[in-house]
Image (cartoon, rainbow, N blue to C red; front, side, top):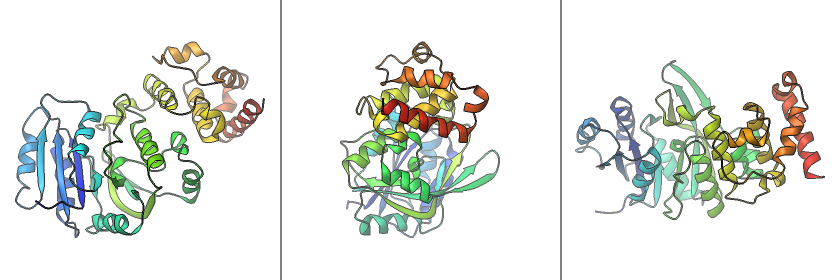
Length: 313
């Protein structure tokens, strides 16, 4: 069997109606040099039966996890099985927009000279029936070009389904993360490879809804605080004092969760090293009336003042 150019990797769990939408969108793609790998965490045979119904028309293979594994592990396993030089991760609630979407990714892979490619997307709110287009604006591109670490402040790349990258088994998802999983992966990949290429076309639809794995972690201090602080331990201990984007992330997190002391941080379950000068940031915020600091424009101005005061002291 010849090696395909792209491996479309699909970690899945039970949602056959959404998975069918994804497979139908793959079936009509004009670019055909790909394989599809489906890794299934479902407790029944519904996904297997659906995949088998496409076996005559698509180069598709199926693997069931027995026993089931975590969502992170499921993603790791399916990428490791890829045979192609390029990996296109697609979550089972996302799907391609237009018949030439995969062709545009393939063209970028062949012509851009970059190992990491991502595109604009349609954010589709499944329960509300609402769609929003998400592009890399000039401001967001500037942040990414200023520093890949700006992803810690704001993930301007987005969902894994908007990304295609060279296969590199030395870089895998870190199973200690859930909320910052993608940011951590992007940072390590971009640092190890040669930058990125952006396609300003909405090639992928991202299904948004309360069935997503990440939904249960959203605005959860016992997830966000330990994971962001753990992420920072992978880099310089004072990265947030060197990088204003990282400082801004910490400022916003302390503000959002109304952190008043180191004890509040430890109460979230974080047991690692506390980043430098966190107590000074907390003290600075405590001196500001809540009615002022909760307003975004004021918060940004105050954050810059705090950053300058602490980093030049």
